[in-house]
Length: 191
Image (tube, rainbow, N blue to C red; front, side, top):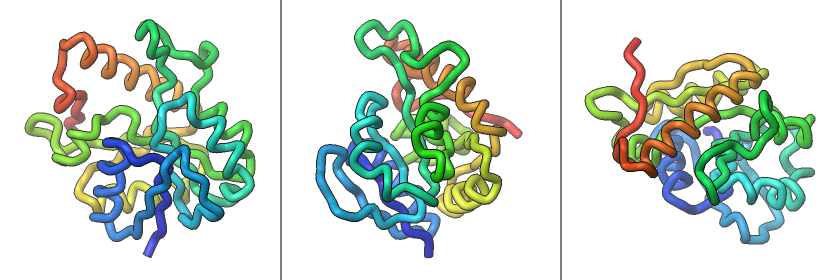
């Protein structure tokens, strides 16, 4: 059985945990301001706002070596809601991978809302989690858990694709904040 540690306790953390537990994983939740001695999961999900990531890495970075680290963040400028906060052509996931070179960093869950993960539907379509990363085994492990939890998973390519996934997440968030789509809606894929 796969052990997953989710750093974060909000709506996304709980929705992701529900999917992964439904897929057979054991799930522990760690509050992002909580201090714990051990992050025990083989897979560690960073289910926190992007500005919290650097503090989490400072606190737990040595424990993340060799683990699959899943970045779900959208590095959105939440003051203006008009841009991403990472350099042009980069991504939050790329920045995380640069400071965690011994971890297998994936980008996933940032193009879905908590409600669509929980419902496992976007309108009439099955919710789909797009996963980007450079480690095929890590992507396969996360994809298998997601699919076993009742949600579709698609390999979106290398970690370089995190840039596009973050742009898609940014667009979806701004549409929802502008009341163009509901927080229970979002993008769906037809295969």
